[in-house]
Length: 133
Image (cartoon, rainbow, N blue to C red; front, side, top):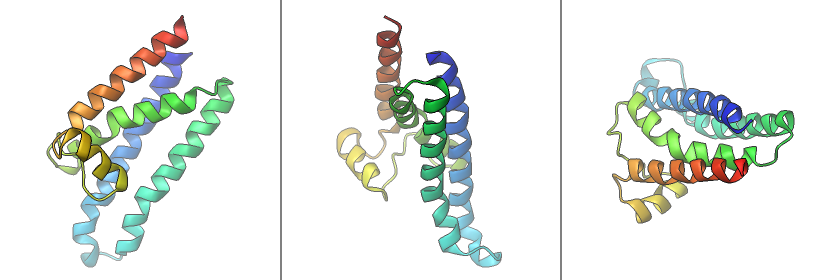
C-alpha cells in the first residue's frame, strides 16, 4: 500500500508544483491580462489547502494515518525541483519568500534545493522500509 499511495501522492505533488509554477510565471504578465496579482498569489495558499485535503482523503481511503507523514516527506522531496524546472528557475534554488524557505536556506543554503530533496527522499525511503518491517 505504501508504494501505491506514494505514486498517487507523487502525481498530485507534481501537478501542484506545475500549477504553482504557472502562477509564478503569470505574476510578470498580470497587468496585460484581466488577472489580478492577489488572485495569482492566492494559488500557492489554495494549493496547500488542496494538498492537505487530498492527503486527508487518501489517508482515510487507505485507512493509514501515516499517509500524512508520507505526503509531507514527499512534498519536501519533490516540490522545489519540480517547481523550479517548470518556472524556469535554477533547479537548485530554494526560494526566499516563505518562512519555510528561509528556514531551509539556513540549513542547506540558497542553492540547496537538491540537498534538501535528497535528504527528505532518503527519509521517505527509510519510512517505507520501516513500514514494511
